[in-house]
Amino acid sequence: MTTDERIGWWINQIRAGNRDGEIGERLKPAADLQPEFARLVIGDWPVVDILDIQCGPLTSLGNRLPGRKVRIRQLEPEAERLERLLSDCGIGSRGDLVAGSPETVQEIWPAPSFDLVVCRQAKWLADPAASLPALYAILRPGGALSVTVSFETAIGRPAWSLRIGAGGLSLCSDGEERPLGEAFFGDGAVVSWRATSGGDAAAAAWVTLEVRKPASRKDTLRRQLEDFSGTVAPLRTLHGVAIEGEDLDFIADFFARKPDGTAGSILPNDAAFLYAWMKKTRPKCVLEIGVSSGVSSAFFLESAERLGLLEHGFRLDSIDLLEHVYAAPDDKVGWVVEAMAGRLASRFNLLTGVTAFDVDRLIGEGKVHRPDLVFLDAEHAHPFPALDLAALCKVMEPDAWILLHDICLFERALRDSYRLKIRPDWMLRGVEWAFEFWPGEKFRGAGEHANVGAVRAVANVEATPAWRALTALPGERSLTPEAAVLLARLEGTA
Image (cartoon, rainbow, N blue to C red; front, side, top):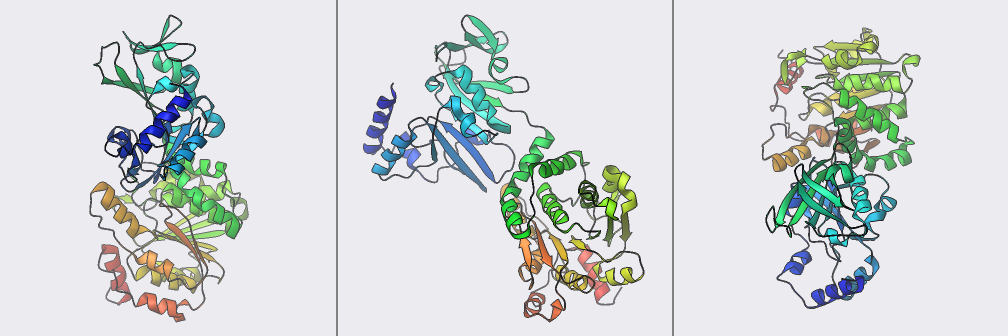
């Protein structure tokens, strides 16, 4: 079928108004991603990028996954003609029509860009020997390529076909047979296939090849950090902080080394925000309130080393109410520091049995330094984040910054309850309310995983109307054992 014949076929199908068959399915704007392709999408990325090869003007893959955004691009040599066809028929595209051919995809998308690439009819590939490696190359680590082709049928120039050999599926070209993975995809690719019609051994059967690109732990972490890209431009514009690819590589490297079993750990996107503020403020002393396993402690120390702050006397003071990790009683608070950044232990000062309410006294006693930057990750139940902030504002300079962890804790709990079918016991809004009601300058990132916010210290914050409104909200104080201990201290009963 020539290109003109193919365009004509689409014109007839769409104008005929075939709403009950395949075209009708393609016209549904809210169709779920077909199960055979949904199962190929791994990871929990908020946005899934899919490329549909030469599917015509309307993708038939579907476009929804629960709790995630599906972004489909359609690669078509005659994209402009197909867009005009849709416009003439009053139909909106279900994907983003892009002009090009499979052989030129790396010119359009130079970097790995897709979680899934689908080619349902490989007979349209003019040169499979060039096309398939190119399509594989634009997969992100962990991504999958799905290609449907028939056995024994010569395709493209030079002609090639697929056969079932003793070693599985093989490529036959110019009388030579090679294993499929070796021929097209190189070492590491995981190649599987399944018959879609005609039976496994039928010469005329159609089969679907599924090729998974390998992904290391660092690859996966680096992908998680892509969600931080929505924060990069505002950081640069509003605060003059540039987070470059090498910065994100540093963060991915750190988390690739992180030990398992780190309860209450910050995530890579959280760390990116912390690193941005370290880069912005270049603090001499950081105060961390709420340590848990100590992943954030180790990250602050290694970030200071990377940014050259150690030569200026950098120090990290970390305090925690408990001596053990709240979710792991056998683990000592801050144990990750020794495991990951033991060489920097002389820059780390850990105190337990104290809270933000004790910071003024600890400074007076010389046990901690007056901080240039604070990371608050303590009790999350309202009103404690608000009370912690008020206490900190009394000991900090008015223009100093406080970083708040878990400003999206409630929304994350809702997401997990939906995705994982569980009922989280940490649906707290205390930190979120403290950030939203903050009467001074503040900044938060963008994206689903933007869970850290920054606020500037405000003198006499307790006298502001916004703060009085915040503290009037109903408390969440009874939801955690740590909150009960703090409440008892405040009320003078312990």
